[in-house]
Image 1: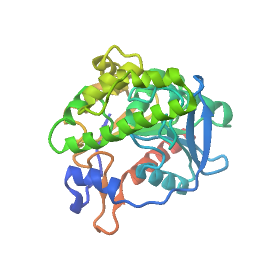
Image 2 (image 1 turned 60 degrees about the vertical axis):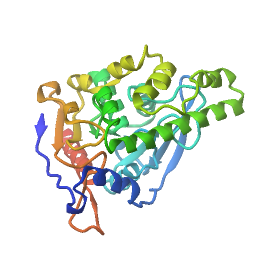
Image 3 (image 1 turned 180 degrees about the vertical axis):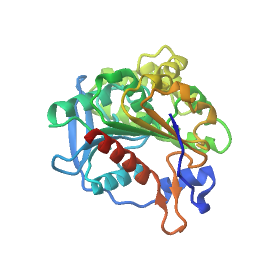
Image 4 (image 1 turned 90 degrees about the horizontal axis):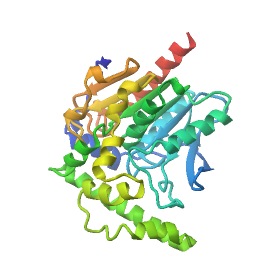
Length: 333
């Protein structure tokens, strides 16, 4: 279902790049009160999760974007707001994103739903009530939508929200090869190469030679200039895909939207510099539980509004709790 948006971009941030860069570079936000927990995965690796809130309040899982973490501004901001609405939250740091490299050559990628499923099942076993909702941003949003589609009606979630999702990975990878978007690509690839380099050093220091060798076999990554190259050389080889085309085809979340059974809000900006308008799905591609909110502006995980440049409003931190409260109310009826 397509729904009307009420988002109005700040008059002083109408450019797609300003919307994208301002919250990432200029927003200063303190970390909410957090408690870190380490989970051991079935393949003897680990995941670090960061809890916010206590007691038996409804629990919301948060998934960050590519090269992000629980320390990303949009995660910290949302944890603060969720706490004020009497929700607990737990932010999943994808493998190697918590400040410490993980113990396997495998990383995380846009289609890897094993870890979110493991976290969800772990919480279902431990909590008196299953997690109330899952919220994913960018890559985390793609992982979320793919997982929701794979699971269908097997989940006990009451709600899900996905923001700025690269729904068609091949199109988004190509978009980042042109214009100003190349600056985003260059920065992300730099961070990913550092991530891989740190991983190899960590594996060598621990004596995990077999896993370290898998990284060495990738060769010199310094000359890689595009996501097509990186995903061919690194993601496809480390995660068992035939090639980059196989990875993009199997991992793009748009094809899973029609199978989602959980009430889900998908927020996409037409001017997102990480993708093109063509990746936005048509109404007939959505299951009856998916609401698609398309904003003309907003950039990539931006959505900054407000009339005063000294008091910006982060619209996602209003819209997401609003949707959760609506679902909470309908579930209670």
